[in-house]
Image 1: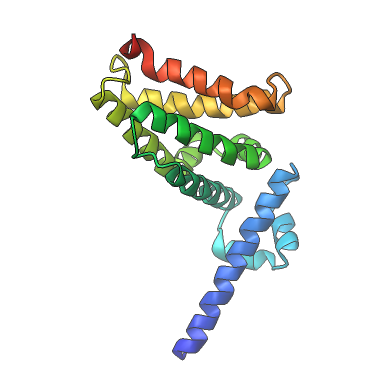
Image 2: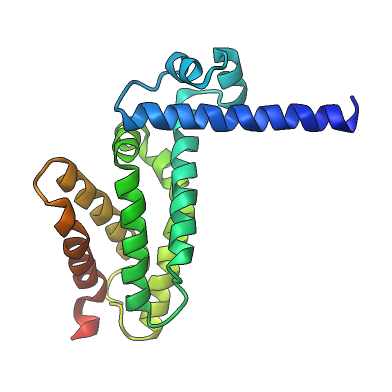
Length: 196
């Protein structure tokens, strides 16, 4: 096979993957069943093509979540997490993460219901590392609590972000108040007695 033919096939495969991920994300956002057949129909490809790229439905859903987390990581990087005091950076990162979660609310909810804990953890690994870095930097600055494991604080940050999204979707928390409530709560969790 010539290099140009290989490049052409690779380009088609990349377009198919993006179409498949877009279709799955769209179905999840509409809270529709993202079965392989439904995704294939939505993407305009065969089920065989979907299976060629994603051998299981869980692998497909995990890829959708990973792509959303990559977009969130770009937003988090744009919030300059390495600039200024760690707690100020954490506030900016939380705001950026919240905007992305809000933008992907339906997909996030569906993925959380349909993916196992291990798959969700793998999909969020890069974002977890970014928050862990902020927690560790905050500890070096004396602004973040040290009486609990850093990993526990990171887990708490993500749990509270997702819980806030659930409260907004359930109508128990006004969306316009959510970021302020979330930021205040996370500050209390992360700072603990370090800020007193």
